[in-house]
Length: 348
Image (tube, rainbow, N blue to C red; front, side, top):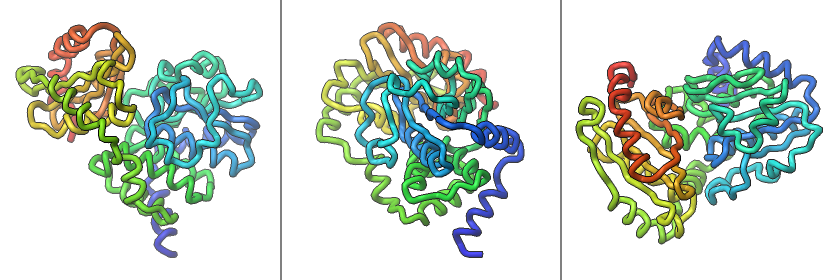
């Protein structure tokens, strides 16, 4: 058995036993599927796009017609265009009526399906593929593995059991999600490295993919970052002293930069030592905010986001808020007691 075969064997042996049922149910549902629409969440990231692309490629390898989409008409971030599979994406309004099976990837709740929410929930054939702790299990079949580092990791396990032959493009799409959702392999189990090695063995260049997805900001990013960091605030006593650090990105601040630059801010803020939780308030539309939370050690970010109507993971989560800047900040400060209740319950 060669190195690649050994890695594949180790991966299949490590698939959680509790996932065997959902994996089998998914294979059964897809066995007689004729046309599948694979949908990721609105405002997609690399894990969402990578999972959707790889799933469509796998379905087409099985001779099943398939397209990919997400539930709004916004243009994708520039970095995401480097992920293979964009030729499979169609606008949400262009998904044919002949679709008989739906697959949701990397979408924890139906609200994030956007314009496709009602159509998908009205189907009796909906497979949900995800790894978020906060997933609401809204599918007919729910292939949700909270232990997985990314939704692309869930699919890598699924493809192993389903007998899909990984192509270079599929490996690229899967690796993109794994790389970004683990923050360049900082968070996850040891098997994420085994999985990454298997994907890279398909001929991928990790330096190129990393640079495409995580670097290459335009010059305008620097003055933008300066304006945003000037809004930095700290609440040392938040959550019984765990502490909160926050910055605000107004809708006006976003005028000269793209989605990639806005989303990159949280990775700057989280490097500070001012508090256990870093929060970035992003006003994508006037009066409508998305909030990114990152925790370091004590606070369960997913629980805090859940208290605010959102969700996510132990160390990375988010939610939405309608109102002004004082309101979005005040609401999170007001969640201090709920955040404090998670101390001691959030593992490393």
